[in-house]
Image 1: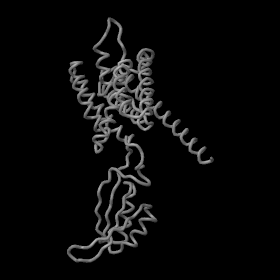
Image 2 (image 1 turned 180 degrees about the vertical axis):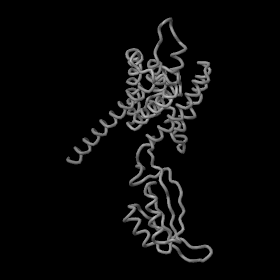
Image 3 (image 1 turned 60 degrees about the horizontal axis):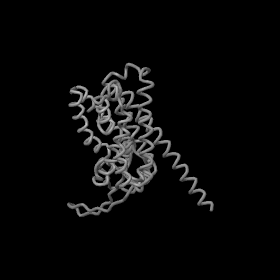
Image 4 (image 1 turned 90 degrees about the horizontal axis):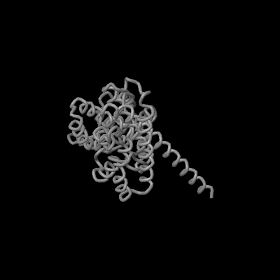
Length: 304
């Protein structure tokens, strides 16, 4: 009974956490579009970029549909696809985030545009800040288990097929077509070039939010005193060490090879320990870009 209550409480707090992440992410995403991208005709890709283009080109007299409304309308068929492919929880999160972010964009555009500082009209600032905010918003929404709709659904589908490709890279590929379309629609190569900057910022920040800066080093150490080196590494550097058994092809001697994975900031300490214990030790250092296990990523978490 106690375990069942604890499990319910855990699920409830998990729901609250995910709901908060999606809500905050929707606000940040909408703010980036409404304040920085839309006013400057920066269409960096995705449904938001397509909506910015359509909102600028299609008018009914003095009336404009609005970028937020376009985003919601284009998302309807995509969300139907999402319902077929993904589970209901994902769709509910997508509907919530899409509706909320679309509404926020419309409120800012129609109610607060007069209060937006002039600095947001500077294309460099708009490209950098807009790209970073949109990526941060999308990343938080993804971490909450939802999506902002549009290309998010397409990207999730592609991630199932091309699991070796990161989310930010897929966005980069898909968004290129929207940038080309924006250059044609606005007949302004300069604005399209700034949109390219936005896409690169978006891709970089999104991967950082989703995957973290978990770049680390994998080090192989071949030493004549492996026991002393491994003992100090475990105690002083606080990193795990794995002993591999090797044999010198030339000498035929058996050797213990130490292998350890550690964060970048720990590497100087490892190098110092090895130097102090064995000046003739042989080190092979490589970059480890994705690590699963204790202290790193959860191998059982959903792929983003």
